[in-house]
Length: 274
Image (cartoon, rainbow, N blue to C red):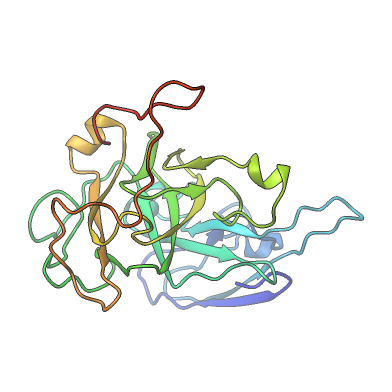
């Protein structure tokens, strides 16, 4: 959704129960709030148009605008808070971009919650890819080497989680990348793990296989008992030709040489991968 635009969304659920569309981040009148108390939900068999406004930043008034990574969800199924609706999967991701924001090659929406994933082929881990020929899909996270990949991370349910991708890192900024140079740009932290709580959203932008090459890279929650229970999937990075290559034991592409200990420089770190 571009900033400074008005979006009209028509909800025609043709459903025997009432539903709604409530969004985070962007602006709307109360008649597009999607709640019971504002009478802005869709009754059984009905339809409704919701209007959202992506407000631009205004340096004169101090308004920060609505550019960022957000989500929308039902707010009425099962009660005035819509908890059963969210648990049933009635939610999605929303990206609002400012003019000139960098565009990704691929975007994946990932939700971290406390409900069991069902109907997967192999195990409790949410990866249905064919490892020899992974094809991008709702539960198959795939990119070619060098592609700019955007993750929109959503926290749902009643627990805290973390988002961690093996072999990849990103800038902890609004867009997930560093723009500009100088002291401000140099002060931006580079991270590979970020906490997400219920109702939280953020974006992470990585370059697939940067300095590490293609392969099957774990993507999981670092709350260890969550990961043990299956809150884990795989980020499949293909080579530049779009093929999956056997890479076990290969050295990283363009490896960074660690300086030896002493002389005031950092020593190489040792420990378990994670």
